[in-house]
Length: 67
Image (cartoon, rainbow, N blue to C red):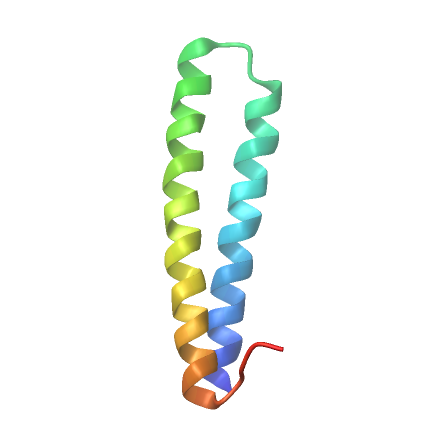
C-alpha cells in the first residue's frame, strides 16, 4: 500500500500544482508572464497525465479496480 499512497500523493500534488498555475494566471496582467504560465499549465497537465497513468498502474497491481 505504500506504492498506492505514493501514487495518490504524487497525483494530488500534480493536480494542486495545476490549480495553482491556473489561479496565478487569472491575476496576471503582463502578456509575457501569461505566456510563461500557459507553458507551465501545459507542462503540469502533461505531468498530471503521467501521474494518473502511474496511479492506474499501481491500482491495477494491488488489485483495486474501477467501481
